[in-house]
Amino acid sequence: MTKKIFTILLICLNINASSQERCGTEAVTEKMSNLYPEYRIAREQVNEQTKEWIDKFGDNKLQNIITIPVVVHVVWKTNSQNISDAQIQSQIDVLNNDYRRTNIDQINTPSVWQGIAADSEIEFCLASVDPNGQPTNGINRVQTTHGQFGMSNDIHTSSAGGADDWPNDDYLNIWVCDISSGLLGYATPPSFFIGDGDGLVIGYRYFGSTGAVQAPYNKGRTATHEIGHWLNLDHVWGGWGSCGNDQVSDTPKQESENYSCPGYPLNINSCNTTNPNGDMFMNYMDYTNDGCMNLFTNGQKARMIAAINQYRPNMLNQNLCSSTTNIYEHQNTTKELIKIVDVLGKETNNPNLNATYFYIYNNGTVEKKIIVK
Image (cartoon, rainbow, N blue to C red; front, side, top):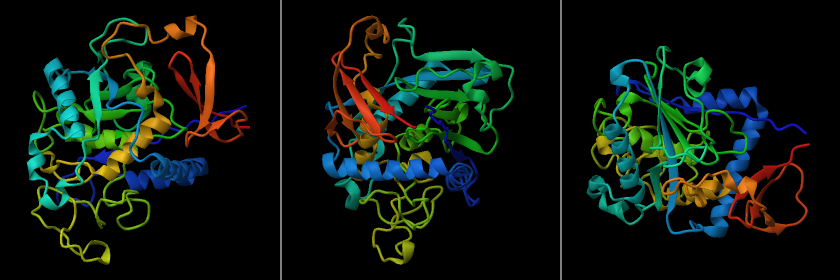
């Protein structure tokens, strides 16, 4: 039995506003789809499974607030790259404000979209327990002799001058480093074919809202945007060959990305339609400056909640932020299988080949499995 694993990157480019692109998502996904037909199939399945899950459950989840434990790998060569704890905490604060819609600039959301602007009910914490069950502050500092990091796996590998992942089923890994000129950061979308490097990579000048940050990406919205990708959000203009097709029904159709800080309304004729409200350029999944972004929608929330429930289920039941319990201690105790469910939550006793199932145990753990012949 062989399991094929692919790591798919969403590469976001830091290009000035006069450039045509700030993100190479379409080019990278097209390249990966051409190289690996399995990737194209996997992404198509993700979107189909996500739609089915949302149709059945909406944005329901197993608890009121989902808290995602974070480890920040600071990979540094110079003192300026070794960002402070305060800068790292400022990013966690931004994420919590943005995903809970307690951000001060929410008042800048046009009134027409205030009713669909979402509290995503997702929070983030620096992990207090490391993979060995030892106390941690959730910050892993690694000094390197490596130059700027690009889009290779060097950043994810200690032997290549980077930092190894913490278990990506249990932690959101964020690597902060001196990133190559032309890059803000990149992330991996969810699927069952993700391996090494799952998480985000972000330049140290674009992480957080204090310290070494550099305008106009100095308010922490690069991480907000990239985690959106990590939770299965596309850009608001789509990117899968159809104008405005971002797989979300309550974002208006948008023809292309926006930069800087436009005035409202903008592009009222996007995608050959007439929309008096124009583009939702203040959405976190557009390319406007950090200071101009201020919302996710209810539809985007549902998609992110579906991604966690389907592809990152360990995030639903974790004790890595407020406890010193060894996350592997259940391996030393007897655990019993309670039930097996498919991606829609239907119980089964006879799993099929080439399908994904969740094995739920009496100790609260959940394992996702796919059997490939």
